Image (cartoon, rainbow, N blue to C red; front, side, top):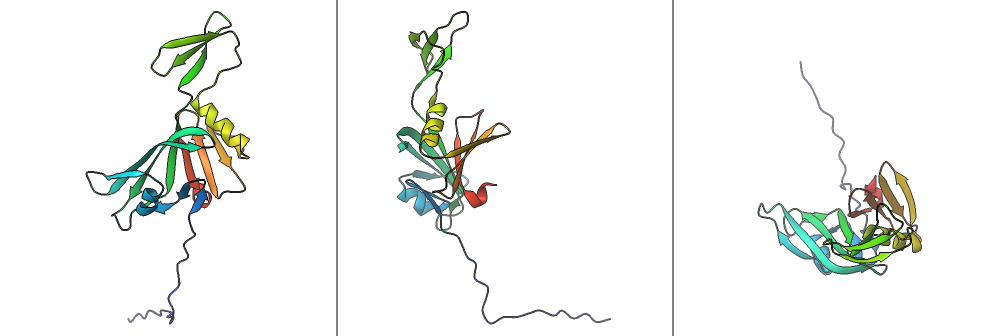
Length: 177
């Protein structure tokens, strides 16, 4: 018994089309190691040499001070990242209702009490501040299974925030699903 394989051939190989990175303020997602460095991230190679951890402190998004980080996978020339994580840094205080009365105590993140307020409507933390800034700047917010999702017609990205963490994850919209 003989078997034959018929293969179709073409003179011109099929070109792979790569979509350009999505831009959001000073961020570019996804990107290469050189893009991360150009955006001001400090990067260091992990001990296993399979990736780079990059971070940028004291950046700003819509007036909210943030820290941001990303992991770049691969060897230096071809290393790439797919998302950026951001964490709002301020306000450094969080407001908590005191049990037994109607007052609010302002507490620093290291647990020192600095002030009391008599209104119970001002509970706010750094996650709330970033959420409010995004919505104020035209981001549509939807909630699904413990996660807030933010999209904006102007940008081809999605910002995800699981309510049990401080991290907001920024991903190119086509890859976000």
